[in-house]
Every structure is written in structure tokens, then in C-alpha cells.
Image (cartoon, helix red, strand yellow):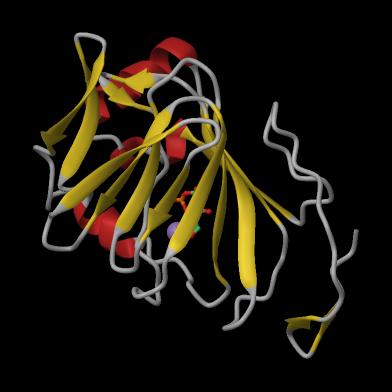
Length: 200
Ligand code: F6R
Ligand code: MN
């Protein structure tokens, strides 16, 4: 259904279908696809990322379906976020991660399918890892960079909901990375310090 927007605000109720098997939103307005070839520096082991590309060709790591809700105070934006299973070296497939441009805005992720975790990290490096699995919601407070990580073997599908005016600050993470990584150690997701932190 078309969103009814007047003067930059949603003015008419609507509902939307969410496919819990593949994560697709009905009548989405925007579809973002993030391929490994554009995410080389997101992973700590860039050599392993290049090797993956040589061995497998390009790979869709995650995708997002969005409705074009106005990015203003008072609106609520939501989307479908789908991260595929796999690893680069021993680091699980994950989203780029970001702070919000309005850093004090929070977000709620409701997990629909798969097994993962949400890495949340403050600028001073303090972090919290929360589990994601169907029926569980993760609250990301303001001032925490956040990234979803697929530690399972099926797509990790979640429904993030956040204030319309939150915006995305990707630059801070692009410049220095997260201070922590979640890697596979003997089949177990394990948090380690990022050896590349500060020099991405
Ligand atoms: C919005 C939000 C999610 C992510 C999505 C993709 O504030 O946190 O909708 O945008 O999970 O991750 P990024 O944005 O890090 O590429
Ligand atoms: Mn966010």
C-alpha cells in the first residue's frame, strides 16, 4: 500500500505484511543489498575476505527492506534486516554497524528467524552482547553503536524499529571499527579485542 504523506508526515494508517520465512516486506520502498566486495574493510581479516571472493565470487552478506517513513521527529521507522549465515576467516557475517546521527536515540530489534547476537558498543569501548533468536527483542539504548551478527546456519531476520529522526552515522565505525569482534572459537561465538581497531 502507498504511504500517505502530507507535509512530510504520515497522515493515514497502514499495515504491512512481513514474510517471516525470507524477511521480505510487502510493498517495500527501498531494498538495500550489501555484498562482500563492498564490505572488505568491515571484516577484521581483509586477506580472508579477498580469499573468500576469489574462492566463491561475490556474496550477499545482508539486505534490508524499508518503507519510506519520513525521517523526522515523531515518526517511527522500521524495516526488515536479513543477515545471511557464513564467516570470513573466523568472523561471522554481520552488518556494518553504526551509531545514530542523533546519538541519543534508541532502537528495538525484534528477532523473527535465525540465531545471532547484537553487539552494542559505546565510544569508550564498553560493550554488551545480547542474544537474538525468534521471539526475543533487543533494546539498543542511545549512544551504542550496534551491529547484528549471524552465528547460526540460516538467515538471521529481525525487525528493527527506531525513531524517525535517528539517522545513521556510519563514518565513526568505518574510520575505526568496533573495538570488539565476535568470532568462532572451536564452534563457539567468542568476543575478542579487534586487532585492527583504530586502523581500519
Ligand atoms: C536502523 C538499524 C537497522 C540497520 C540494519 C542494517 O537504525 O539499526 O535497520 O540499518 O540492520 O545494518 P547497517 O545499517 O549497520 O548496515
Ligand atoms: Mn540503528
